Amino acid sequence: MRACADGSNPPIWLFPSVGEYPVYDDFVYDVMLKDERRTDRYAEAVRRHAPGRTVLDLGTGQDAVWALAAARAGARHVWAVEVMPKSARIARETIAEAGFADLITVVEGLSTEIELPEPVEMCVSEIIGTLGGSEGAGSVLRDARKRLVKPGGVFVPHRSATTAVALDLCGATGGELPGFPSVAFGFVEEIFAAVGRPFDLRVCLGGLQDVPEVRERSYLSGPVEVEPLEFNGALRPEGVDRAELTFTRPGRFSGLALGMRLWVAEGGEPIDSLSEWSNWTPVYAALSEEGLPVRPGDRFVFEFTTTISDDGVHPDYALVGELHRDSGPAVPLRWSSTHHGDGFRETFFHRRLFPEA
Image 1 (tube, helix red, strand yellow):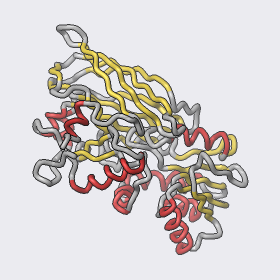
Image 2 (cartoon, one colour):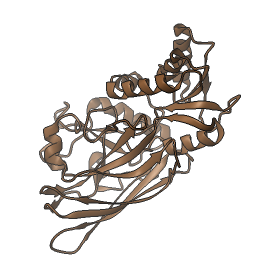
Image 3 (cartoon, one colour):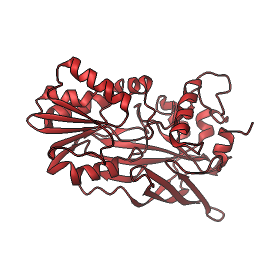
Image 4 (cartoon, rainbow, N blue to C red):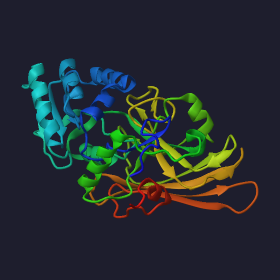
């Protein structure tokens, strides 16, 4: 497993996309709670919609943050669903200590497999992934709409979309492929253990959000949206989205930074993981090992396909496109990222990331 060259955290480093797997720990929960932009917007939406309603909190976590917030806001009853047994146990203890054991019921298991005594009037969830639907929000909330929430029930968040921007990775890192900091090793091993084998896991670019100067020298285009998920509308977790990026500055096109925009409430400003710090970290979609030279006006035209994997919840992603430049033929490029695919070290990026011993 390739580590950072000097063992430290450089301006850009790699981290596995952990939200899609049952590997949450205190470190991950702490990062989530420190995202004040996220928590403030959720808190406002819960305070607005929970009073007098029955509420379903999907993925409540060990802190049961939104279950407790809904109860404190005046919800009639809250069902808090958590699939990880340890987190469910701690959530029960947290809820009891807060004095809401009679108002909040913790339900252990997958939301797609549970039953409730009656449909609820509101659903709150924090299962948006590093890519909008990567934690299964599309399939999980579609199921909740059909079985667990009353017609016309309110969903928080309101909408999400996956975003894409052309990236010059060398521009971000100074030319060297970033590696994993030591804190990431345990998460990689836990993800492999959860799936049952090593595979070409989805990798995020830590530090890309944090420094505007790094984004300015590494982003080669403006962003586009794919994978729209309308949680209070017609929810479509599978499909093909066509998009086009136009390069606005010269550089070497190595791939895409994939992020997400999240509208917690209708009409509000979105959280944008490509342009501001959040606990959602952009995913790296590697398209070219050395980077392809591009100039302003060049275009990358692509199709972004989302399909639900064989677990019925988590999506697999595929991207097929062409780079069009002023001179020469179009260059075909492709990328794919499965939730738990069989292949390991099948891409140039993963062979460099996981060199053979």
